[in-house]
Image 1 (cartoon, helix red, strand yellow):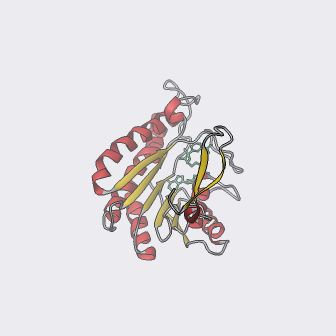
Image 2 (image 1 turned 135 degrees about the horizontal axis):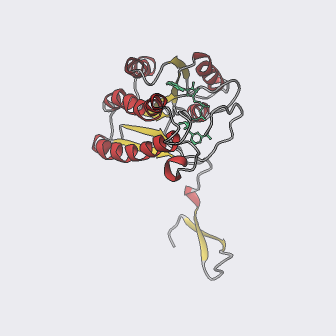
Image 3 (image 1 turned 90 degrees about the vertical axis):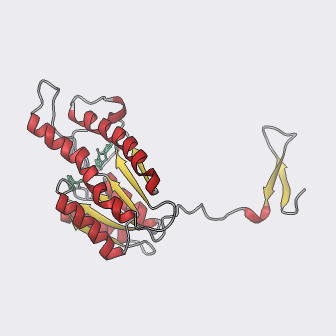
Length: 239
Ligand SMILES: NC(=O)c1ccc[n+]([C@@H]2O[C@H](COP(=O)([O-])OP(=O)(O)OC[C@H]3O[C@@H](n4cnc5c(N)ncnc54)[C@H](O)[C@@H]3O)[C@@H](O)[C@H]2O)c1
């Protein structure tokens, strides 16, 4: 038996198997997620009032892991609230609010520049902005509102990536960046009475597949998260 292995107890399911424990290698801390010193942009990082929407929760969790966060939102006050909440515990990384509209190219470019100026690099883009969008079935939906919904829920993610990827490519190492697109279970299964939301979230899922193939060679991972309904205290949108 190697010197650093010791028998501790019998395995309760298979009593004939002795459990071996590597004494010197038992960590007392959970494994690091490797986010310390990284820099993220989270879009839609605000949330009405004291609610804890996905963007606000993501910002807090990233900073808690040591990742500096640019909290981007159309509503500056909501972004400021997120940055305040994020910085409210000592030991966390920095969080800065930024007012920006992800449907505007100039704002997306400025957000990436702000991350580079304030934090010196960009590693992570969380494309979290998403709205319920135009209500109704194919028969009922207003086509202008339909186009706006696709612009906010899908095209804005491309536009943020357009400026974020070149900034990530400047990073050293094999993995240069990570993009997380916020999908929804509705994008996998349909399942809302309105056509826009599941259509746009389905597009996010397949857009992620294509983007991940395009940018893997650059060392940039692209993934999609598809949550079910989240309980949000200031819940206002018709998901
Ligand atoms: N809430 C849910 O149950 C749920 C479930 C599955 C997926 N999602 C997805 O999670 C994401 C966040 O949802 P949420 O419910 O936490 O959102 P939320 O409504 O609490 O927050 C969204 C934020 O995005 C901001 N925003 C909207 N348009 C913007 C724009 N053009 N530019 C910049 N910011 C803009 C809003 O000001 C708001 O602060 C969305 O993509 C949503 O589809 C939510």
